[in-house]
Image (tube, rainbow, N blue to C red; front, side, top):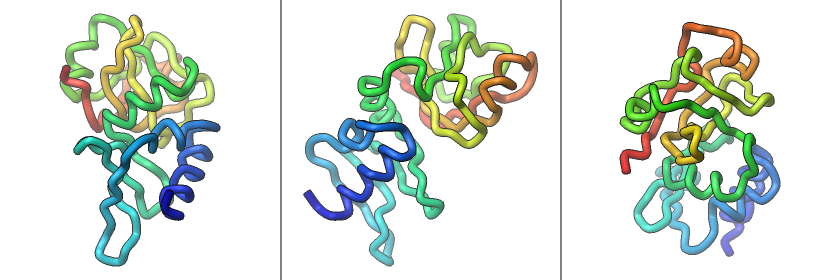
Length: 152
């Protein structure tokens, strides 16, 4: 395993919890780099797992979300929505607070999240715009900025 991949696994474990790095980067992973050599995109089977930002944090792709969903026990890094918003979120539209059914209580604004249907299906991945308390309390406002919908 390359030293870069070992370091990136450590970052994933820090950001998402123990075991996340092994789950995200299992198997054959391709690292695309910037012109300066810094890791930027990590792919498996031609699908984007994560992007590695200049801030040292990962942003999830739907393929990475699927891998994390299999590894992390609920409710970790999850927002759950119901039938009313499922088709919209799956299509890549944002999650609004009034449609949030449950959320990991430790979610803070800026956290990367998995958006799940109440039946457990992964609908999308995105970034929290509100804290968990605010998502539960508000009837208006964007809760999750969806980056990638699971249109399957």
